[in-house]
Amino acid sequence: MTKPLPAALSPARLQSLAVDHGTPLWVYDAATIRERAASLQGFDVVRFAQKACSNIHILKLLREAGVKVDSVSRGEILRALAAGYVPGGDDIVFTADLLDHATLATVVEHCIPVNAGSIDMLHQLGQASPGHAVWLRINPGFGHGHSHKTNTGGEHSKHGIWHADLGAALAAVREHGLHLVGLHMHIGSGVDYGHLAQVGQAMVGLVRETVAAGHDLHAISAGGGLSIPYREGDARIDVDHYFGLWDAARREAEGLVGHPLTLELEPGRYLVAESAVLLAEVRAVKNAGANRFVLVDAGFNELMRPAMYGSFHAMTLLPRDGVARPLQDTVVAGPLCESGDVFTQAAGGEVLTRELPEARVGDLLVIHDAGAYGASMSSNYNSRPLAAEVLVDGEASRLIRRRQTVEELLALEA
Ligand code: LLP
Image (cartoon, rainbow, N blue to C red; front, side, top):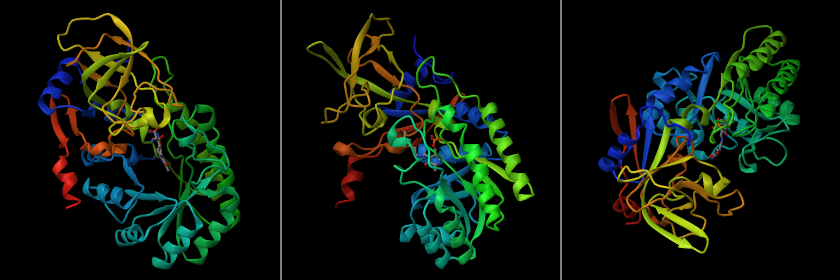
């Protein structure tokens, strides 16, 4: 028994999309994204961390669902604008720990509020654009993540302004006449609930310090980091309970500032991870000693998470002939010329097996929960073109990114 797929992504539909568009192929389900967005409506603002999935059509869908957007590069700002987000207000926030020259010019040109993760950013922005709207991203001194690579708090993290430097950051805000919108914390990605639950109280302490330094603010952001159940049996986060914790923190903070505060949440994974699958075709099957390898036409250049973090993604094998097969312990690997191109591996790179129906050439492998940090982390390694993306919306489906061609790759070097 494996994790169920979104209702609209039936085996027959996935098989037919693979025939129509080829593999590897990303397939997203619009209904899942809308449902996840609706589940967060307690928060005043839900701001999508688009690094999780930056396709313009997914951004449009989220915009239509009332979700705002976070951008972390000039490219992500231009994507947000292309998706119809409006510059000049608070539709788009730029979050980073540095400002390169081109991005600084872009945030100034489009009046995009900047969530600053370093004091240097405040000086550079203040000189270029006095009065610009800013958030302060604070590292509270603790963090957590599904991997140490996704923990963004504590002294080993490069992210955010260290909590003890809040006073210096506020002084820089004052020096340049910057407009302080709010305080922000994001302690990591794939965070356990115990750690997530501590952030609200840490925020109250920072608000107290900000007010004591004579500053006003209008909003607080809980950041993202909400986990999803990648494995069957993993608990699903109780978002209403989480909202309750933050709502209480917000009320305490409102008591300190003396007026209402907007409460923001900034999820990436939670909104999109479970909406999509990666489809790949089995192209070779072979044994190596005790291991049975099933090689598919998608690799870590498409879905990097298993190779990068040892992440687990549920898998479903759809036999080409539709006939049930006996289960086998299987190593699932890709086409890349690199031993780490294995979808079933531990965080240290150790090869693991997965019990799957006996795979044969021509079968379709469905990799679940690939909507977050899937397509957006893809690369052209081994000169492989980026795969196509399809969005399913009820009965309809449409290509939302065509497959890149090798000719397009080569043209950059012409
Ligand atoms: N806000 C900030 C400032 C962030 O840096 C991130 C993620 C988010 C929000 C959204 O976090 P989420 O809700 O998706 O956990 N590639 C890794 C995840 C890296 C996350 C980077 N920052 C993965 O595949 O698990």
